[in-house]
Image 1 (tube, rainbow, N blue to C red):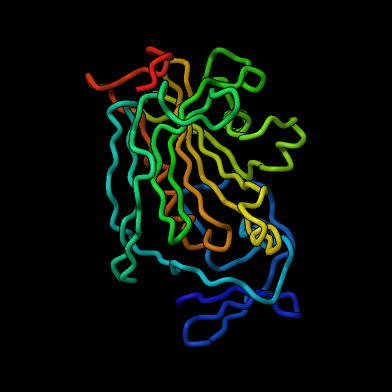
Image 2 (image 1 turned 90 degrees about the vertical axis):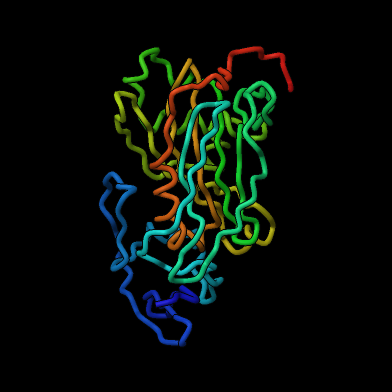
Length: 284
């Protein structure tokens, strides 16, 4: 079924409308027990109130924007990306063959050393070292590097760090304005977080929502950006990938971004590797 809209009926049920104008009604569950979300699985048979929050539908309306990508269980065609300057890799979707859908990725920031990368905060600790965007479908995949926030990650031993604290550390350094902790919590929140060990190294995975609207129109419609992220540590710095889109597209794009975020790896450095701490004054 190609989903064209997702709406709430007067009887408080969800209505899915496809391109043939056929509708499917789903009973809206009232509660959902807390548990760790597995990024490798998803449910398409039950809709929960918490899922509405993830979709950005905080104010329930009878009209919904269309999805630009259909719900799909097929394996997408992917491309591999390797940044030898910063020594990491990941895969990202490029096509959904059965839907004849092609992603329109543009490399908005080519890989560059930490010292010359664009800062994300006034203190310039967290910086974007590479980024690709699909402007047409409002998709962003970016990789950032920055030191841990010592007020949130107090332990020197990274094996004792929790995924929630790592996520909070990255988000704290990501704010573009100087804000208090309470203001930052109101702007963004971590929905789920867990960790895994890969090749003997911990990786922390998390899902979060940025409530600060990207524009006035989005603010009025209750549409926000929804993110998946993964972080690993090397040489005293946090290497993080984030993949995001607007909330109405999350049901379709979320499963694809799960594959991207789960594929993120720190790779063995080559002669092109430049550690973040090397020549911090160098801007070229």
